[in-house]
Length: 252
Ligand code: 13P
Image (cartoon, rainbow, N blue to C red):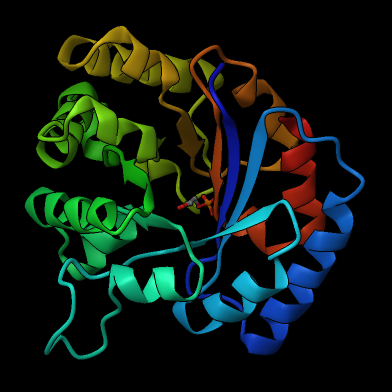
């Protein structure tokens, strides 16, 4: 049975104080929820990761980083390595977010290196990809997603896939209030699973969790999550409010 995941990507939000308050509230609220085969992950900013990691040590909530550098160490001013994340008990990293691709020039080739570095350090990866509106309009969305996945992940052997979660985030649905319809999400997720099945054995494709991200809210989460190939969500804006995030967790 595939694991369900609700992950909150806090992006560049929440100060140290605000992080402590939000984690505290989430910890409290999550105690009342019976989680069946479901993981709950939060990804605060780098400076607040250690605090969040410490605070959630005894909670079911897991902590992820929003990014990392591909090198082990060295002269890379402003960057953070996989080993540094492991050192503060962060075992998950989000890679390939469209904002990293768009504003920080992250390419498929660079992401393949980051993927390798994360796996080498035994980090789990939530790997994001998705098409921009133009691609969707011109009918290129399947091709775009296929190349993003192939270029960054298909060099891996089957075993590595137990450390990978995929996150389909159509760029046109991120922070816009516009979601892919549940059917559009399902159509793409089924396509992705088939793609993985063609490259690997079906036990890999059947086991990999595929999350949907893009304007998921408590009001639309249940319908999106009800789709056969949607195994949870990567949540942006709604992850910054206890009420909304918990609403989404309950929906799953
Ligand atoms: P929103 O939920 O704010 O659309 O953001 C989605 C996202 O980018 C999560 O990584």
